[in-house]
Length: 107
Image (cartoon, rainbow, N blue to C red):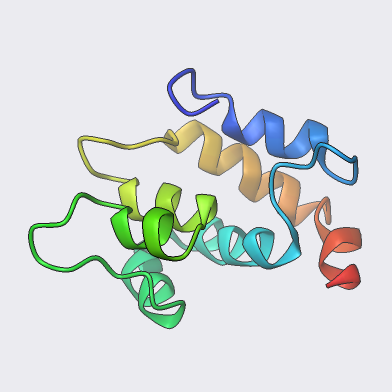
């Protein structure tokens, strides 16, 4: 999903199924990011996922917090990006249509 840049379509197509990619908490964080990617650092700081100096982007999110959304956010805009701008736009549109509401309501 990450190397083939199919994460966004997988999140959308598997939403509200037993094979959902993200839970409501992760979806909420990703929604905040997709709404305004310029707030990347603030979102990572809020969730205590900001990497330390010299750490690979997404290290703290993935290794310490177990957060796929955090890792994807941390790597966005770096040489190791795992989600393209097109995927962010696809998710922004999906969130805008309320695609995530049912999962967020369950959390």
